[in-house]
Amino acid sequence: MGIRHGAEMTTFEMRFIALRCKDTIAPTGTLAQGVGAKQVNSLGEVYETKYGISTSERVYGTVAENLEGRGPCYLRTEGISAEQEESLLKAYLNMAPSQTIRWLENETPSKANVEIEGTEPYIVGGHTASGYWVDTKRATSIEGLYAAGDVAGGCPQKYVTGALAEGEIAAKSAVEYIKASPAPRQAQGPDARFKVAEPAEATIKDAEIARHVAEIETYLSQKNSLYTTEQLEEAMQIAMDEYAGGITTGYGYTEKHLNIAKEKIDDIESLTGKLSATDLQEVMYIYELKERLTVCKSVIAHLATRHETRWHSFAENWDYPEKDNIHWRKYVNSRLVNGEIKTFTRELTAEGQKNYEHQH
Ligand SMILES: Cc1cc2nc3c(=O)[nH]c(=O)nc-3n(C[C@H](O)[C@H](O)[C@H](O)COP(=O)(O)OP(=O)(O)OC[C@H]3O[C@@H](n4cnc5c(N)ncnc54)[C@H](O)[C@@H]3O)c2cc1C
Image 1 (tube, rainbow, N blue to C red):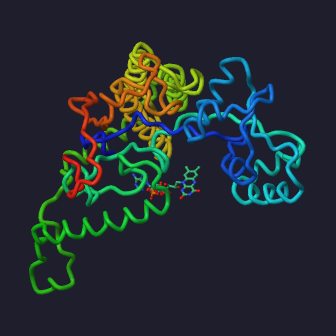
Image 2 (image 1 turned 120 degrees about the vertical axis):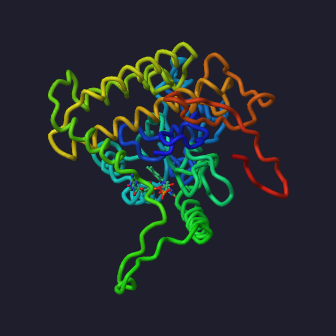
Image 3 (image 1 turned 180 degrees about the horizontal axis):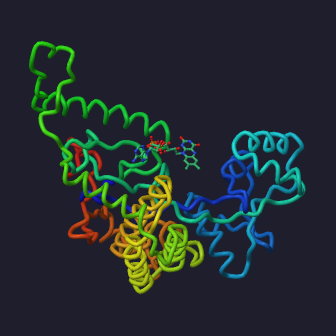
């Protein structure tokens, strides 16, 4: 929504890749921290000491060991005590039941190490920093629009508690904004006190509504699409996976890869106008696809802009495989201008600065 309305957005290049138990995608933190399970390769060597144990380094190490022929990789649980095993079975039954079921169906963790792998990239969510560029009141660059939680960008790992705190800040700021705005027109006439006050200004124009209705009717009536929404969605996933640092390439990409990804996403986008739907549910799938394609374009533009590898495996820029603190200790931001995502950078707010505020 924000990208399409020209809001300033930030940090779409910092994707999140989770290190998960293979196939069940159950979290691995409880194994690493709860029972101190080390990451080992197929030779039984502990490799986490070589790459680091931050979230992204744990994934990076696993990908690297696999690429160098020492996979599959595991969390070493063999030999844990009966009490530790029981606590793991219970913890996972609560958090990710498929993993407990898998253990019960196969071998329990004290008998067999747990195979691990990285997930596909997550773009927006509790772990990532993508989203609207907001100030300390959580105001976006669109007047009257406030953002909180996962969609407020520039600050990863806020999770549920952070989202709640930001929600409160954003709601209070929105109320402040409404109070400072011109009063709504009061209803007139003898029964005025029973009438709902009208907004001072209609914000959605009739012509705009008519355009949307016509678009929806087109999707519901046309029958000439060569592709289904699902097929285009699949094509989108493949283009992003293979050319924009997906799981297939170990999260790596070059500028050339990204150019191909952009071309493919533009092509898929041009085909969406011909899609057809049999009901409003299917119309929604078309709009979901269109919005995901917009997000793809943002991700590609952001990945292409950051000429460094700041977060191993979250984004492996093969043209610039090192971290570059001299040029890239900054935010990559973007706006949609005439249908193209234009990127630019913003300085970090200096630590200890009295007036902690970003600029719009
Ligand atoms: C797999 C997973 C595990 C996680 N584990 C944890 C954890 O253990 N602890 C923790 O603290 N955090 C965890 N998180 C992160 C946490 O869930 C999120 O950070 C948090 O829920 C964000 O809250 P939010 O209100 O910003 O967004 P959301 O909870 O995503 O809420 C946004 C809401 O907006 C609705 N919406 C979207 N578009 C529209 C629209 N156009 N119109 C109307 N409604 C719309 C959505 O349906 C949704 O209900 C996890 C996240 C994931 C994905």
